[in-house]
Length: 214
Image (tube, rainbow, N blue to C red; front, side):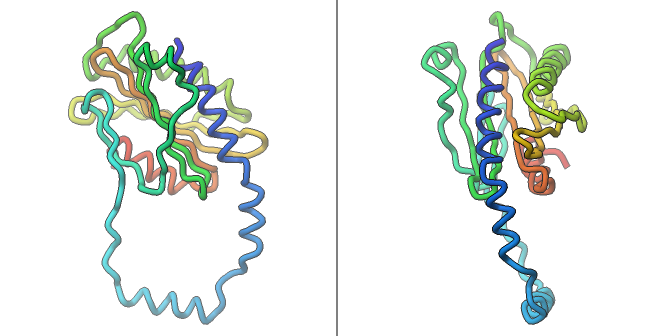
């Protein structure tokens, strides 16, 4: 199935981008010492002012003909995916690479026709089970120190969504990777959220924005 070989190439290149300057980030963190007592006191005082919570600003992404709509944070910059060549585009494959370069986080979004011209309802268990199983095999070969962290089944407005969480390493750097999958009609949507292992909370927040889960 072409999608999985395509996603392997994209995911590996995205991981290298994520991990390319992890050492530089570690060095930068070392250069900045902990806040002074004065700064800490100011921060403590500011807590008592109870500022209004910041409004969540995001960018809307629509897939599967508007059946699957979600929001990504504004700090993820959208770019093209060179791995999707003209032949793939002609076959109906589309995709975008959203990247937060400063934090080294990536969201890979692809949509492709289901194989063999297949058409499915919005929550087809067999199709989603097969896709998750194939994705798991693909990721086991893409990561070192691979570990499956969990799997979720979500139904949102009648659309079946699968969430697969794994961890692994590339070139010695540890990452978290979540693949979100949905299929409806003749199309398959896949979103791969990749973050450095140390950014688990932010990673989880981005995934929740995609799945709409609590």
